[in-house]
Image (cartoon, rainbow, N blue to C red; front, side, top):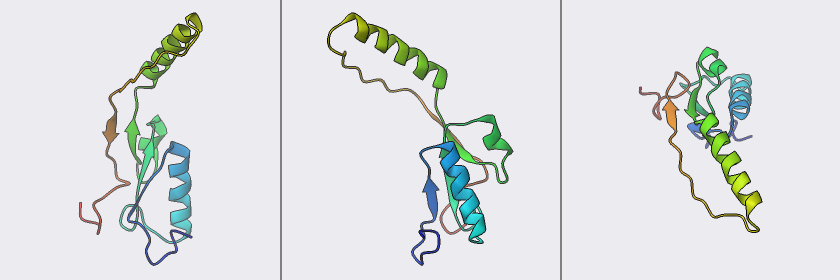
Amino acid sequence: QILRSSERPSAFFCGGYYLALEVMRIAREEGLRIPEDLSVVGFDDPVSAALLSPPLTTVRQPLDEMGRLATEMLLEWLKNTAPPRHRVVLPTQLMVRQSTTSPGGNT
């Protein structure tokens, strides 16, 4: 319904890779061109993102580092009676590909 609206957004920032694939599929079914009519960004950066048509712009996260830190935090929690308070900020990368453009289609 959002894609059919007269107030359709110029872009979707999807919280996951597979959600971005679904948005791209529905947009095509509605006759929208990516990125000319709708920009799409996904989260995570599987190898297949670069192989799509058009290649999907994604946010790459350090998944190995996230897993390692989560394991360390869980082990620390198991040693204590209360969960430790942690604030962890890890770097991300915006992998700009052909599924995005500036609003109005200007690159």
